[in-house]
Length: 82
Image (tube, rainbow, N blue to C red; front, top):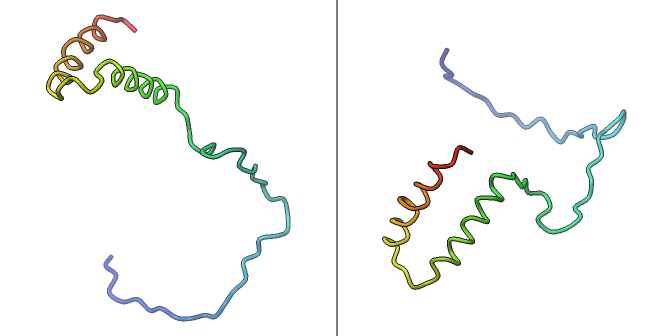
């Protein structure tokens, strides 16, 4: 099936029936940023990145950081059964 034609028509303004019957209520925002999902794995990853940034500081090169992460940390993670 292939669409060969389409037609747009102005049917005028229409009202949307938003009232009547049971409708779910939304909780108000309690604080800024409270609508984001905080997955435990993402939180742990953010903490790990923060600690690595503290460890490296501004004195190491990008290459040194890559070697440390790809060899030292990766090796330790692979040793862990968890």
